Image (cartoon, rainbow, N blue to C red; front, side, top):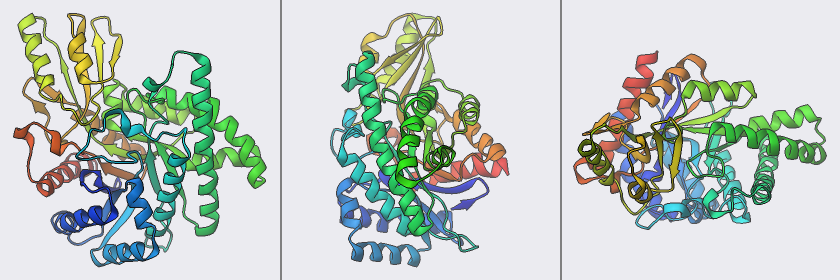
Length: 412
């Protein structure tokens, strides 16, 4: 949907189906009803998620034409894509394999290029006949716990190799813009335990690896000046601001945006998502109640990284809820857990969501307009505790309406 804060949609990673046939069937079942409820008189925006297999199938010309006709017939459009999960994302144990294959591999490069080719065809034009910008969000290069990350040589090797592959996609995006006049950007999504985990790490990677390597390569490939090459990189590689991920790391939205602005870096899209959090009381029995409440969200499909704030305000990171639960002690003052809980629920008994961070990000978006793409990304409906489950279309509608009421209408 076109809103005063930008294009708003929801990410279709919520729907099962790893083949295009199955995923398209899920879209056909859900989206017309959602469109009628949420945007009956205006085009309805979609954040499309395709597995590698589905992207290969959708790129077949006859399939792409059928999808274009369906979008037009239903007054819908695609403005962003989620290229983080490469393979199965439902009905299987995902955990750290959500990062595989990572940016060290050619498979990740080819998958991402394919998504951009599809997006270049699907992007609509605005009222003036100009194609809107489009983005593809992607993983934070890799999963740091797969490597000897504390070893400088190993870290440098991984960062150099992944950056080289990102630059292969950047070169493709420059060519696509020359051919189609579509400006598209790759949006890296920092995440706990990712190779890029925080705003500072994104900036360091950008300034120490992406820009130096990219300027050298793009000046040679395209005959650009250093300044032109840097401008192209900043156009085509941006940050995906996943609100849940930054909240888990205790990073304040305004501080993140200020840091990016200082270095001339951009946000490609906001992924609107909420995490779980709770401060621990003083009394041992009460602390145990909070711990057991977190345990109710300890499910086996997705990673639920935990960042604990200690009594001394230090941060301790755990790869998943089981490790955090096992290490719990009296020094822990607060936990934040990577679990995309519903946006419209602020309290879960003794636990809370990071809903306030979403409100703050949307307020800042209203003030600064640092992107034009907003995507609701709650994908855990199938693994929520039973009392939080509801019919999928109803759940998506509630998410979208909450964003419209608490983020868009309240800021315009």
